[in-house]
Length: 132
Image (cartoon, rainbow, N blue to C red; front, side):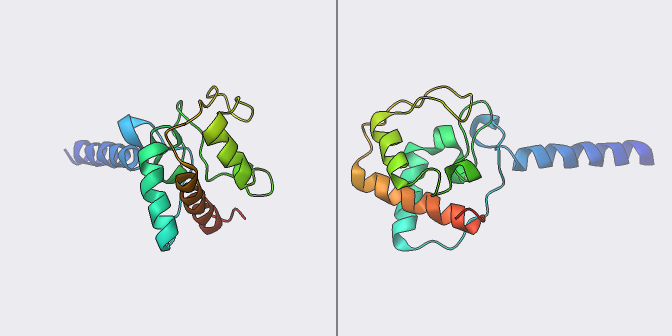
């Protein structure tokens, strides 16, 4: 009896761990993201990111397994992908080159001021996670 209860608790704990690491639609996140306190511009960016980016790039830039890459990742550090790369990706789309998720289509519905705020949010997340 005790072994059955213990086995049940282990199974429940494993299930809870999988649930906590899951993103939308049960997709696993790719990186663990620490969220810092955000300024006004960054908070606006967070809202816009949730509306326009999270469905592919995961909540808080954590990526979505089999859907889209994490933006809180060393590949997207400012020295490798400056802000201009984010503007170009949103406005023009981008061919897949670091990941195997396929090409990113242009997001013509996102305005340049909105992109600026989204970038501020992404950069805040990156800094809080040791990506400068």
